[in-house]
Length: 355
Image (tube, rainbow, N blue to C red; front, side):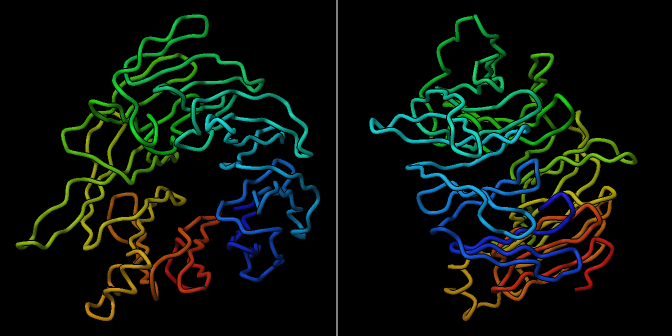
C-alpha cells in the first residue's frame, strides 16, 4: 500500500499499481523472478529483490531507478531514512544482516549464526533481529542496544545469559511483532520448553506476559482507535458443534487479557486485519491445493471469504471469494479493501461489500 492509498500487486515476474479509483496506473515486468513483497521507501518509491538484484523503482511509473546485484539475500526492509536492510547467507552458512544505501553502498553489517526466522523489524529508533535465542535491538548504526527473551531484558554491556534450552526451528519470534504504541510491541515468542504472548516496552526495557482466562492462538492483530482504545484480536479455542464438526472463534481482548466479545466462524481464520473506525476484517480460505483436490468432491465455496466485523463483534458484511484467496487483504486509509482471488484483484469497501 502506497502513502496515497494505491495498492501494489506483485506477481513472480511483474508488478501492478492500482489506484484508489480502481484503475491500473502502471504495470511493469520484473528484472527476474521474485516471490518477495516489495518494501515501500520514504520517498514514495519501492524496492524488491528480483532475480539476483535489489531493484528500486519509481512509485509514479514503476520504472527502474536503481539496481545493484546481490546473491543469497532475502527479507528486504526499508529504513526510515531510506537505507535498505536484508539478510545475506554466507559461504559457511552463517548470515549477516546488512544495511546499504539504495545504490548498494555498504553502511554496516551484523553477523548472525544463521538467517533470522523473521524479517528484520524496524520500530522507531531500533531494528529487531533474532540471534541465538534472543531478540536483539540494534541502533540504526548496527550497534546492539539491548536484547530480550521471555525471561528479561539485557542491556548492552551486560553478558547475555545462556539460552533457555536448545534453539527452536524458526527462531524465538513466532511471528512478526505487532505495534501497540509508540514504544510498545505485542510479540509471540517460542522457546524450547514453551511459548507465549508478551507486551514489550522497548523504551522502558520491560516485558510482561499477556495472559487471559481463555486459550489463545494465532492469527492475531492489534487494533487502536480513539473510540475503542487499544485492543487485541486473537484466535480463540474451537468449538465442537457436532461430532467432528467445528466452529472457530475470534476473541477481542483488552490489554489486560479480559475478553470483550467473541465471534464464531464456520471456517478457520487465515488472518485478521484492522479496518478503520474500530472494524476488523477476518479472512478465511483453503489453500490452492485443498481447493483443487477437494472442491470438486466437497463444496468449499463457503470456506473462502472476507468478513467485516463491527467494533462490538457483530458482522457488518461477508464477501465470498470465487476461489482461494491468493493475495491477503490490505486496507487503504479511506476504507478500500484490496484482495486477490482467481487471478483478479477485488476491491471492497469497509462501509459495505459493494465491489
